[in-house]
Each structure stands twice: as structure tokens, then as C-alpha cells.
Image 1 (cartoon, one colour):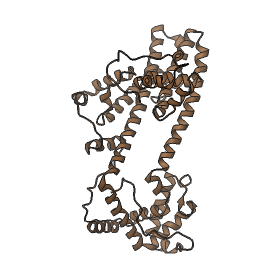
Image 2 (cartoon, one colour):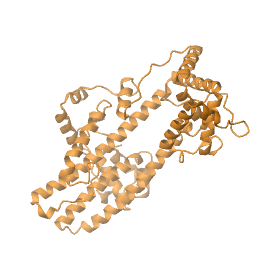
Image 3 (cartoon, one colour):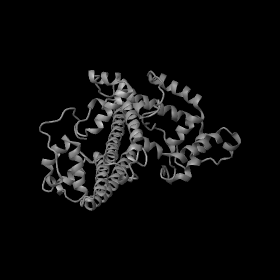
Image 4 (cartoon, helix red, strand yellow):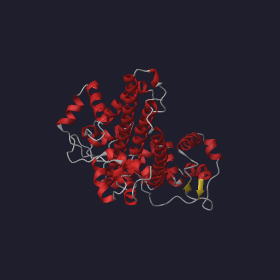
Length: 406
């Protein structure tokens, strides 16, 4: 992401599309890091085929690819409003701008698809996904839900054997902001409480919303304090309020979607018509900041999870938990095998669940049905028992569990 700042840089250079035709990656990179506007201009040049190969490689590379969707989304809104203004004023450039808008939308769709694929790849590599695709691990975790009291007894025994103090219980986060605020309080995020942050926390709701509005209007002069972990939730609330307030003035489809211009500008006084266009442009800026807020919160949450997992004692606690799960499965072989039998139709190969078939909703529904079956002795005993010839045996060594459950 371009480096945020609060004061204009006297050396900042604003790029134009013509500047990029012969600009290589080495010259372009510092300009993109310095300015979000430059990133947007480069994204437009890329979408319209005016970016040299080395610069295009830089834009789609690891330094800027995560911000490309954001830049293209902002460019789409800006160009759309420009096309609307040109059409209304009879500007001869309206046709060319409309074609440019279509090119940007095509590039945006492609960038979104690439972003989604990167997320899928990262998720497949995560420990949580590995648990979700393992019928053995899934069965043990569902067994814990069927026998919660016994599991807690076994967990306490394993902690005693390991001579390790159990971690204190904490409620799961209600949302990503809860997770970020908890992580900041636990020291997983290095966030300094500066006088400016204290001042923003002390602002009234109206004053804070005005601060957020000013930040949105100046794309290259970001108020870095708004990105503080303890201000993220308040920042998002103010952005949502601004979108709600602006959408009717902008003739937008909804607070979250600009949509086509539905207001007939020809029926309005010239000043009022420009006010509508300015409101639409401001809503585009608010949408950009909202996307940035979401991305920053997600990055903070990922950092917290990674740093929590990197703690030396995390592996010890995870091992204790897994050993307790294995002990429970050994104590309840019929129930364990019943769950494995019910999971078998969702295995693409032995020992591998197909998460595209058993998605999150279906997984939750199946778990509820299985737990209900396990409370009925007749239903549980009627289910066929898996044998070694048709099902993989329960592993003897514990499988490490990802963070989250304690």
C-alpha cells in the first residue's frame, strides 16, 4: 500500500497517463509507494494497454497486487462520474471515457478473480483447511461436541501430565474488530498510543465523522492515526454513516454501490447538478476508504494469529489439546466410527474430504444431525461400524491443531 502521510510532500510527483508510456519499473516503484493517486493512474494505464511490460510486472507483483483491486475500484468510480459529467455537458471526450470505463471494469473483474484465487491458495495451505479436509480430525472435533464434559476431564488430565497450566478461557471474537482489539491489548500488534490517537478517541461522534470525511477527500494525505487498531471499529462506523448520508444525495443504488446515475441533471439548476456529481465522487472515495479499512483489519487479524502461533508455548498447548482428543476417540470407538461412517460419502479419496461438496453450511447441518444421532442409542447402534479393511485406522500420534480453540 502507498505509504500514508499527513502532510503533502513537496517532492511528490503526480503521474499522468502519458508519463507512463515509457516509464520502467525502477522509476515507477517509488512513485507508486508515495501516492495512491499514482497507483490509480498506473492501474488505468495497465487496463488501457499503456503500461510497459516491466511496469506491468511490478504492478501485478507482490508489492502492489493486493492493492490493485482497490485502485481499480476507485478508478472505476472516478471514471464513471467523469463520463456522467461529460455526457451531461456534451463534452466530446465522453465516448472515449466510456470506452476507458469498460476497459477498467474488465481489468477489475480479472484482478478480483486473481485476488480470490490467491486467497483460496492461502486457505488451502492453512492448518484450518487441513483439519477441514481430514475426516479423522473432523471426527475427533465433533466427538468433543458430543461428549464435552468428558473431554474437559481428559484435557485437565493431559495438562496435569504435561505439568502445564491451562490457558484462561476467553470468548471468541464477535467480529474482526473484536479480534484486532484483543490482539492489540495482548501485545500482538505494535501500536503506539500517541497523543493524536488519544485525541481521536476523545472526539465526539460528529467531530470524528468529520475527521473521517476529510481523510476520504484527500486520497494522498491519509490520516495515519485512523489506521490504529483501537480506532479501526470507530473508523468503519463513521464510514458507514457517511455512505448512508451521501447515497441519497448522490442518487446511488445503495450506500455500498454507486450504480448508474438515476438523477436527471438537466432538470436541476447547474449548481445543484454539480452537487450531485460531487456527492457521487465523494461516495466513491468513501467506498475506497471502506475497502482499505476492511483490508487493514484483515491484515491485523492475520498478524495476530501468526504471532500467537509463533509463541513457544503455543505448540505445547496445541499438543495437549490433540492428545485429549485422541484419548476421547479411544474411549468412544463406536461414536467415533459412526461419525467417520457419516463422513465417508464426502471423501474424494480415502482420508480426504471434499470441501467443495461439504461446504460450511452443509458441514454445520451434518454435524448437528450426527450429534443428534449420537444422543439416540438406537440410531447410533444401528449405524454400521467401520472396520480396518474399509476405513483408515485412527492415527496413534496426535495431529497438531491450528490455533483458535483452547
